[in-house]
Length: 392
Image (cartoon, rainbow, N blue to C red; front, side):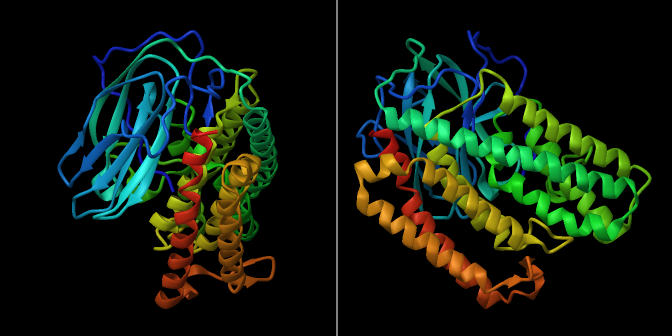
């Protein structure tokens, strides 16, 4: 699921960086594997965030370069999200699906000095309530403190590359079917090609020019006057309106955007930050809890269970890359995570049909509640991974 990511307001100072920085699960900057200002999730210096339906109050609006910990409490009536943005609305860290009365922790690596932005998003829509967050100090450089952290970064990068390669191959087949007017073939391929995207979706948020919204924006999140492109535009063409005069052009645009993502990942300066990998594992589960469970994501095709499984797979792969660190720091946590993933996978297996899944509109409300409970139980243990990695 992707929400509209508007351009950064003008008139705000931008910092000069020696190396361009991306965010989300990736960083186009040196790995900050051991920041000298690192904080743990239990740090007394954690920045508290009081989020309501109309405000986003931080206990501090500045920090030193390195890791910053945010403790976000939702004191409003709407489910909210919290983001830390770099230039161009590139996501440095995010927590979604924070229900009323809940508190969530976000640890963000901010290795470069300058102005960032924080945002609370009551209702999980729109620009959010934003504020400037200033980071000062020396730019953080990578160290060789932990061979396990380095190995985790390299392992996860290999996973990302493998998924994007498969996304390109299956994406081209999907596009070719649309351009040939073969609706049934395109329908069959739609949930399969999305699987490779959904497993690594936070990666696309790391790149500028709204790459993720171009690929995966839902119709409900369109801003006034915004062109709708990507998977869900083509989903509507295939299941609701029939192919349109511009469907072939939209298919070509989707493929161009997928190729742009692949080019970014294959760039020599593309690296992976283990701390953000941990946050991404949690973020993928938040995606399931926020929109997959309700059926909002694939509202025309009802192929939500494919996306659900893909998000879970992506989270599991991210955790697996960090497993040596988890086992060293907290072996019991690793065992708990394994049990929760196994439990959720067993529940999802009930909805298999052939090589895929049943249509999500066949899943009852009671069954959806069961799935929601399973994902919440898994999320509770995966949410601890970021703190474990931060303390490594």
